[in-house]
Amino acid sequence: MRFVYMALIVVLAGAVILFKVQNIESVTVSLFSMSLTMPISILVFLVYVLGMLTGGMALTLVRSLISGAKRREV
Image 1 (cartoon, rainbow, N blue to C red):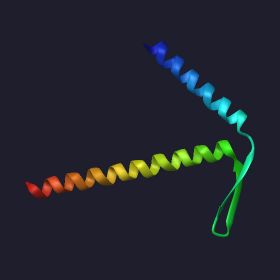
Image 2: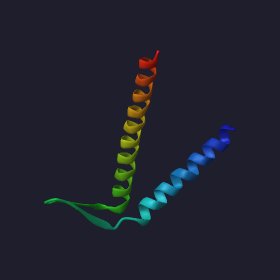
Image 3: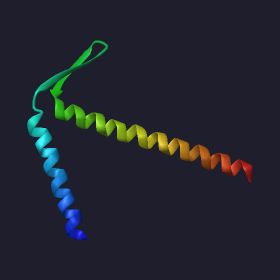
Image 4: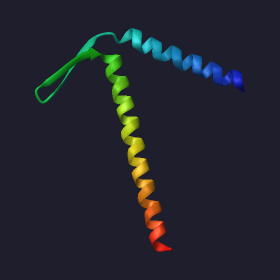
């Protein structure tokens, strides 16, 4: 089973490297009066990380609200 996991990691890493190599074009992102130019692959990675952070924070908030409501009922 360990070899299956290692193979999956190698395939996933290969896909990430292939994505990085094929998406080297730059894109400009503008917000209000600021603008930032970066490769598409970096932008996708940053959006992914931002989504993980906000999703994790939202899940933590919901869990704490539910546990707080359960404590008040008892």
